[in-house]
Length: 438
Ligand SMILES: Cc1cc2nc3c(=O)[nH]c(=O)nc-3n(C[C@H](O)[C@H](O)[C@H](O)COP(=O)(O)OP(=O)(O)OC[C@H]3O[C@@H](n4cnc5c(N)ncnc54)[C@H](O)[C@@H]3O)c2cc1C
Image (cartoon, rainbow, N blue to C red; front, side, top):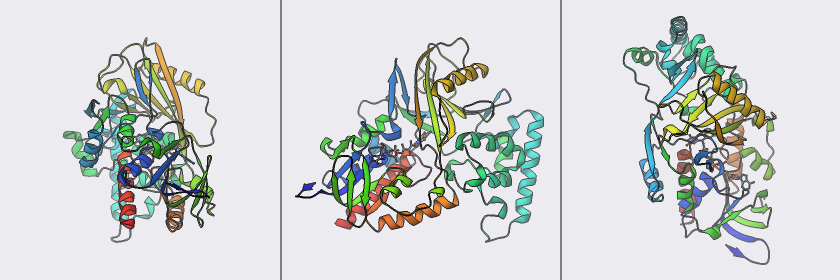
């Protein structure tokens, strides 16, 4: 980085020291001229880990599924001495007082008999209708134009009304018909009718995350692995981007003005659009926020379970996870997730009291004593992927790229993805940027 009379100049200005920003820096390499600015006082973004009273918790339940072995190997090589478990996941849905294997749509035979018959009947005739209505080469049938309609059209009223809709409404905290039909991308466990029927005799619930890995020190260990490639002087903590002058290729931060050749931002996309003064349709950007309650107890709870989905609208949470069953520790250690509209007020104390009572009613707790807790609101948590957001993000990202500004990451690209996706995207951008100067 050079400093003349005016603003300093840096070739690559990276905004955010979460997974995406740190991965970009790591793959640009030590020989590149880059600086990371991070508004928070710590690295990690949403992949931070907290420890209390011997419990280790992430900001939210973070379990990792790597599809690129070379990325996992790269990270592990930078985590010396860290114990990392690969675990066969055990995930369930709490339904009518029993635990159904996940995904719901492949395990309707485990439901009470009348519910099973209703789901199977509706599934069969939904698929029949789709087959009769479908014409080759016409793209998605009219019945699948949004997320909610897609659920009804593919899985029928029974499965949709008993699980897919209540669960996703609790999570996304919005009307599901406003979401794009592919709002969850590869994270939605689609199932063909034949696979559903076959599963009744030969269970095969393998999915994109049949196993997961987890470091004993929590999600921050992957962040630290990326950060090990970043020299301390290239990282400015407690410094926020405030404004971007696209024409002048200048950024104003809380501490200085900087010229850049390329700006790589992992800040939430609508904020970057505003900071860059881009005309945009604000209504295209909606999202939920998630309150995560981490709870540590004095004794063990259920074994052989990693996380459970709760479609029941009477329960405030949509999912809970058991940290203690990853490393088989002897005290129940839970994360509990509650979805809210982005503008809702969140009363953490009241939410925790309600959750504890509900966990008791669900039989998750018996005579357990709470010995430690932590809460965080992730805002945004799940962005609402709609036709409008997809069009607006694509249009504005093209404008930004024309000025050397690249908005990437889960919130920078305004998408639904995993940390591995963030690393893959950052690696590709770093390769493109270094190739363009070579
Ligand atoms: C509830 C939930 C559960 C999840 N579970 C999993 C999981 O199990 N497995 C998995 O792989 N992924 C999971 N994810 C996704 C994962 O958390 C994200 O993909 C990843 O953390 C995103 O990293 P990022 O760097 O793109 O964004 P962030 O983590 O949001 O980092 C962006 C950084 O930019 C900083 N910043 C923002 N604005 C500015 C500014 N103006 N100036 C300077 N800095 C700024 C922020 O402080 C932040 O540190 C989950 C996400 C959620 C919400």
